[in-house]
Length: 469
Image (tube, rainbow, N blue to C red):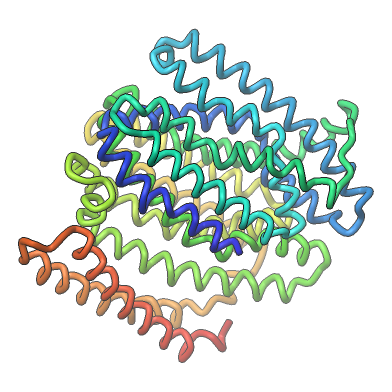
């Protein structure tokens, strides 16, 4: 089910991104990406770590409706308070800060999503593992938003329409959820004491998200301030493609958190270890293939998805594609291992280390290299995050010792090398044909790469790895 939700999110890079890139051009898309980075900071304050904390809190008491109702009500009260406060702060900042004043209308319109976050209850449904409900709802609103963007964004000045429409899926889902809450919980008004008792634990997840938000959005903010809207547009385009791939890549493992929390809480550690080990192996196989594929054919994918005028996004994308590997592993080891075991501090340390490295490297690389410098900074920071998290896992748990590194590396390389060679040969053959479209070229080389990499990797996995997991 979660895979279907993520596939609906791929509509943006595959359909919406090619359209808006050609209509809004680098400057227009850059303004929206810059505004989105600003909004993410205020959304961070509005959420205050609740989206992650709420999943764990609700998963632990999901078998007792009365306790679950009290937990959900008090968490919702805290969320409403912070969302309203964050929206007020955003409005004041947009009118007073010189660098934001020129985009105040765009920021406030997009900021309505921050306000509506107050009634978001995805964390409850995820904690209850209600994925069929989440799937249908998410698919509908993402497709509806994509349709509205294609219909209403007609010229470069319509960035003011495109920006708010990107917030529609989450905002509409928040409202829609309200009509189905009574099936699972009995919401009630709670006093400040009940709500604020969740603040302490939630702050752990807030700090984690805050650190991550810094090094995922600071690049865009600095590019917007130093390099201008066009440079932000180049980098933002590469990031959009990366995010679509990240979401697709981890779709199968992101549903593990409620189950992992439940297994850890109930003491079923053998099942917990087995699930995580398989997830790590699968993630490495998928992320390695996808990273190499899109790094090899970065130019073709940029020209296909963004069009002419975005050629300067090719080099940033080449670097940023390799972040898929550390991001996928950090997601599993941090969010699915350390957090369910109550070791959030190690994840926060990793995110803090990554953020610090990203800030320092951006100060030197963005002025000199622009979008490419930001991409390099992001790659290095993601590797630092993974190193810190792995050190915590090795110290606290023994999961990594159970992963057969040799057979896993054999599985990856056995498919990667011939797949890359075949893809490059296909590219050389088709690129020589003047009439070949970017779509046909990209589809041909991608299909050949995936066919060879997927086929050989699957055979090697079943032959050498499956029985060891």
